[in-house]
Image (cartoon, rainbow, N blue to C red; front, top):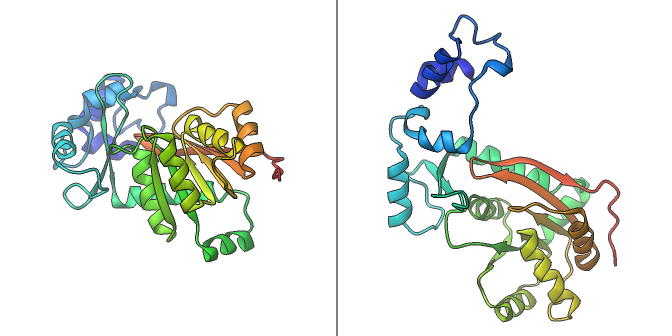
Length: 254
């Protein structure tokens, strides 16, 4: 991968050379000598960093501005997601089909973590009913990935935007009766409070937390109130499936 970047990315070629690295020593250079990368560097040098000729950051902005956020692929082959813009201007990140599918498989694997094959077959046979609670008004990576992943396992789904009135949440959740919840932990906490108040009736098998840090106290609260195992998925716009966590000694509370 380093050799490919050196040969095909003009940014990385220059960065490696500045660090005293070329093809004669690139395979053995200590990790500490490799150029450091962060999100701001990536976005500032996006057009020179990528190794395909038909993408620029400005083109991606125009695509997002002019096209509905309906998971359609840019140029029929690129899955485009953007960051929230919390550190300034939103950045756009791109996955080709192979990278996108690989990432989805990783998320699905984490979501099913700890389930036996019998439990997985039972879940898929009965038909997962998934409620996704988060910001849904853009090409946010998690929302795009959840939509495609849900399609991939043939699940029924509803998306609840965090800006919707709670009365709308209550009506849709009681009608849909999801058995899997995916969303920001702060949003899922609001759902837990609705369950505690008796306004929403649910039987949940899994809670997938993503998009925000999940504290130990909130994890225990969600497990107690919702009764399903809580899986914490860690990722970012530039790499949506970085890791996942689950309490080892989880026991359902009924």
